Image (tube, rainbow, N blue to C red; front, side, top):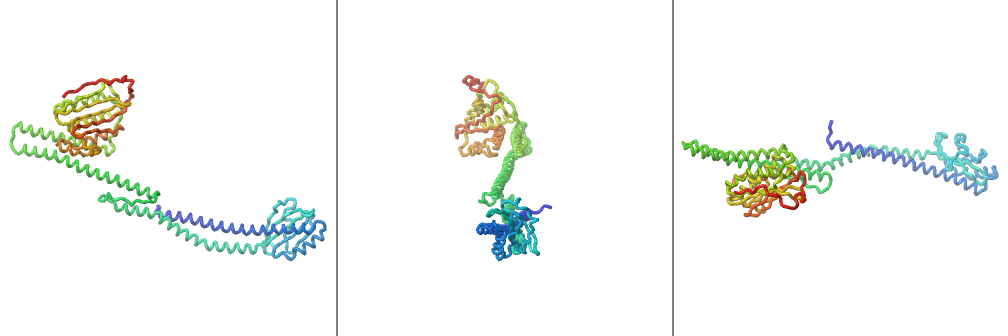
Length: 483
């Protein structure tokens, strides 16, 4: 059975506080007992020191009878619940009151006694006595002194203290439970607040964010992480909505033109030439729509993560030459002069053999589309710092400075481009940027409004070529196309 975190935390805190409380109670009792016994032992040790000092002061080491009389006179009235007996090294009792019942046979002999003496406990007349046996030499004679104290008062104090601690134990457990519940509730209250705020956020108000915590702890990190996730979700939803809206808008125009041309062609009888013109318009729109659908499907696969570039050795010089030969007649028909500045030798780069030609075609198509008749487009491939540098330069309309960072966004078209009435969906450069990113590079744009633009990117050479390999001379041209 899985219990809520609040209950598990409460139980954990209760267990911790309860164990700590019980250990504290036990430690208090043992420390009190040790302190009381220490005082008792210290008192007995001092009493034996008093006996030693008395023997030395009265010089009792010579005459046993004198010692017995002096001891009886000195200590018989000072017992006061203390037990005392004195023996010399020959086994003669110097002082032994009737109630002192320490059996010397059960005590270690004087020769084996440690300097600090030996403690023992025994029962005498239903009373527990704690005794200390210690030996010393004074006035030329060995003395063995046994001192004891009844534990009745000490045990009574300890019993009362123990009973007080036992009565406090339920209170300690109760306080442990309350403290555990309070701490767990306090610890989880920010989590509950975050959950309540998160429940208010849905598809219609994704712009809302969780309250920012200034505690700089794990909960603040959790709140910031959730806000970042909401930011990504909102961006994704907005992207899907924009994608759908733009795709619908871009598809609506060619579909409407195809329908109108078809309706006009079917409404009246027409000549074969007129039918061919209508079919030519329909075919052009269908081709445009097909290109748009192909781009949309490609972007959908990109978003799904199914499109992956496979880098392998590719001859960049050959790919650029093929692109030049493909686009030369197309741009010549549009009145645009296309030239190519390429090395005569192969230039092997690490690239995807399908995506790199598509990147070249997108950039060349974009250059030709926005370059007016009479302009020029230049495709070049050069070596720089161990990399192959691709560059497409045109004399077209250029890109406004404020739009240069957005021309790679999906469906975005700069204002001056829309004014040219040139066909386009704003997806080409977005695809180009994705292809460049998969080749670990980035398309650089240098543009001057009304004077043209230059798009460039570089790829690593499969085998680096240094300046010494070309002896510092320019690489020869493959061909120069003329419009």
